[in-house]
Image (cartoon, rainbow, N blue to C red; front, side):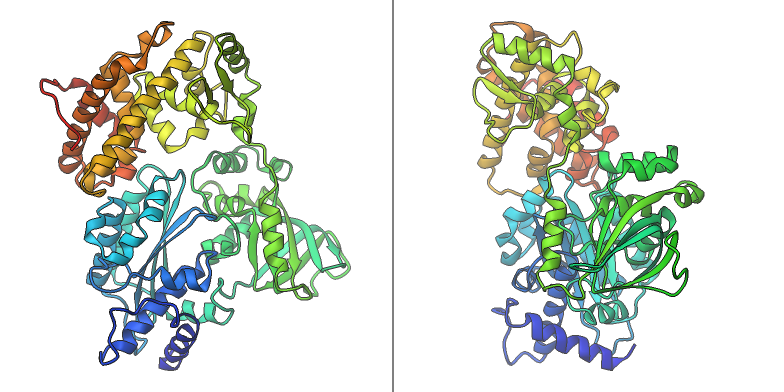
Length: 569
């Protein structure tokens, strides 16, 4: 690559984003003006390249400037449930790469943001605070780290190690963070196809394939797991930029996909919905002409618009590679060569918005849930165990999600509280597993569940009040209140010995208002201190999803002697 390519990249990003990027802090007399504009436009390009956002969204996500704390762009995509954090470096000669100091500053900025240290950032980031907080507290939100530059593709050893350490800490409890290094060569190839995802060209074989001629050309058949794994190896999450959701990490569905590969690879075709790909053009090569059993195909400008979890789970499979060869996956690939511009978006939307059966839907058939619902009905309480658009919680009604969280927090088992925080769906994926049976079994009484919900609501109201009373919504104490809500609830249930009292028909959670406030104050203070000492390098958002670290905090709070009243301020 050359300075010519750098200049071409510069012209292209300026044409697209310059009119929309923030520049109120820039002066026309600044000798570095061009370099700063190029850097900001490149950061906007990075955001749009890995999300479904518009040009204006990407441009206004730029926070580069004074006190940016190493982050040049921050964007949360609700539709893809991902938080994008980007650093951009404009390298004029195209020969060097970001140094370890610049990478270190980026890593520190990411750490501060995840730790809710908002006062360490500039006004542009503060303006995006609500969306960032929403992202950090949303279940399964992915964090996408991007380092984009116009130099050499690689990074020095020390810079690489800093990024690896950061990813290891972010992914301590579950895989939520990924890193993308976009050097000059990669950026240039992406530019060749426009800002929406790059020139991804796929070559693959289909068995038992067929073709649809009208109204638009499309092929379908079976592809092996090993070929799909190669897609992931070559392109990673760039495959999914047109999808409404990218990879979701270690979800119940993804674990099931991996389990099928490991245990029943021959059954994969029967158990999986398959993959849908759109492409600018699709052609069958001459190999295997006239034979519908096997065919070789090429797809230009391809995107996976449905099946991201299948592709990523297959791609990340660490087991026997021979099992991937046995895996057959349904695939259909649609050519957009003769379609209207908006047709790809329509395909994507329709393929991702159909009603799906989820694990929680099967819970409504469980005999224990049916029993609890009927018993509560006799008490004048509505327990909604099936998903319903019309359901609204009230003083005498609650749903399965709320019941699961409340009972999990009430059982003096920190691992259950962690599971409720990290991935509530794990309780429902197998109704015969211990995690579900501990919550709902023949000994679980209807009043116990209802009163647990009422107590949990009281605890959450006190947490919300405490958050609002903070002088600044940032720092470790704020992180404890937001991310530690489930563990804090479990601590309160245990410290006040509420669980045995839940079966009492006269149980009234309001009696414990003062006690709840005091216990929360004590636990928040103690946990904040522990995070500042024992887990000083850990992110609160990650610690409270880690069973081992959370148990240390839980046990410390239960063992502590509370002699004085404390406040949350």
